[in-house]
Amino acid sequence: MIISVAIKRKSDDRLWVGGDRCERHCDIIRRIVKGGHADRVGSDFVQGFVTDEGQFVNRREAYCIALNCHQFGNAHTSIPQLTSEDLW
Image 1 (cartoon, rainbow, N blue to C red):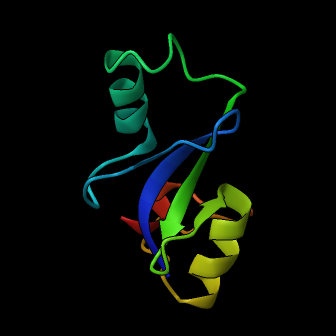
Image 2: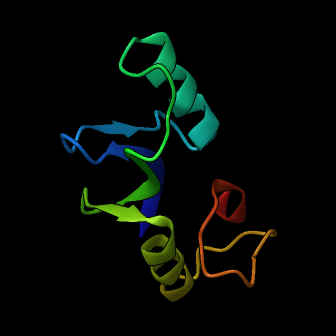
Image 3: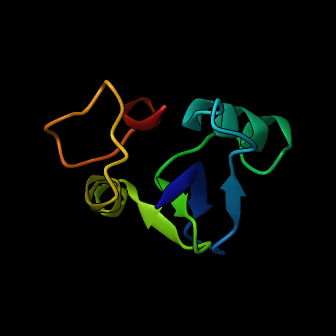
C-alpha cells in the first residue's frame, strides 16, 4: 500500500518523505532547496512514493501498487504513473 510521497536522490540514495497525506512532491522539493541540499531538483532526483513496508517506488511502480490495493480516489488516471492527487 502507498502511504506517502517521496523523492530520492540517485547519486547517494538520500530519501525525503512526506510528513503527512496533505504533503505533495512540490512540498518536498521546497524542503530540499530551502534546506540547502540542492539548488534545484533535476535529473538526479526521482519522484515517487513510499509503501507501508518502507520501500521507495517510482511513479510507475506506485501506480501498480495503488491499483492493486484499490487506493485510487476521485482523480484516477489512465496514465500509468501515480500522482498524489490520484490518492488524496
